[in-house]
Length: 125
Length: 359
Image 1: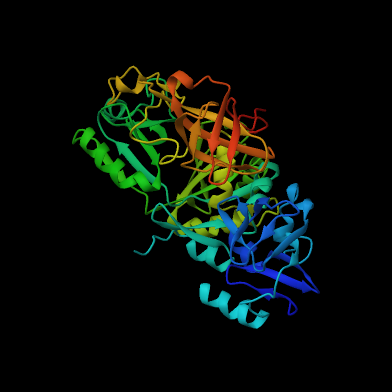
Image 2 (image 1 turned 30 degrees about the vertical axis):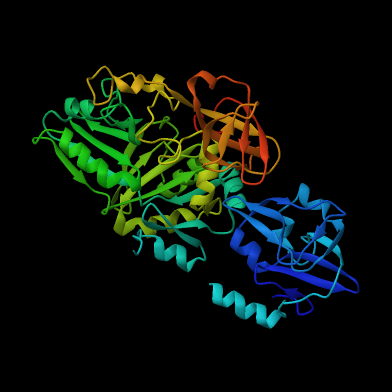
């Protein structure tokens, strides 16, 4: 169920590399664990993300958790639809529920392919 | 430690519920999702497994007068077939537990208590009641499911084949389902028209499935139970009520109408702090434990319950603040990642509830 073309982090974010840019989101496993998402906090355009560092947060009815950047780069766009419809992260985590687009500063490192990520998720159950 | 299981725990597991420990029990938190279950209960009918709660029978010569001295409930005006919400207090007027007392007859009662408090409640009641009054814990033999929502009456009548329109708010009736004793109580914890239903634990799964067979009913987990009760302004013991605070501080002083000399009566009127309702615009939630500050930044209190309110589209919370600040119009909630401006509002947060509907 996790798209083959994406890269995945241990903290359940994904990155889709598109040339010098990457689109970032949370995984199906993450949204499933969180339950109904009620709030997403994202950085403004122009902020610089550093891989493995917090860049925002996501809240569900029951819990709040940090968003950890899977890649380093400068935010070039944020998904403004999430402000009023954070449930898009639940219903379409790999599509309409994307979080930010960043202009990469360096190579994506330490991320997993879909198969390795699924093994990782299985170990967390 | 392994959690206790209700008669329905296996059913929840078999039907894909997300399970988690609650008050020592393994309980369903959600099935399809908290928001969908919340909305379904407000619009149609939700069915909740509440078998973890405790039920005690109190009977025997002098039970009426003895129970009236043990709990804050006004029993003088409580007629057979009616039930009433109230408190088990400690000597200082702090709340040991909140619960409902049902009167069957002059000296014949049932008390329904919180799961996490049941063991202590039983010990406290046993100590307060004289020997000739029988106190029995029927929790294990009793299944409890709550049917809540504007369509709950229609569902109940369809499943039981009886008219319940005349059963008023906080009234109950004993009847039968498939030959088994069933207690139907017009009470609940959602702010909606609804029923708390008590049946033998052995018949609980069959009864649950009979109710769910109606298309208007969906199973609802403890996640939505919490958002529903908070919107309705109903307190949760252990969060919004505790042994350090009195019923008066929790905003329920006017319920203390019993003239019996019950334990904690004097202290129950104490009001050093007050539990106040707060409304926060936006979606970032205040959570249990967050500090509450005055507009100048001075921390004066803390949040006891807080959540995004699905039926209101904003965040709501309950919080303890000093009585002197209880009527202040604005506060700041110091949430984990932000300072949230909060407005003092009135309960209930959600005013469209159908709980008191009449015909």
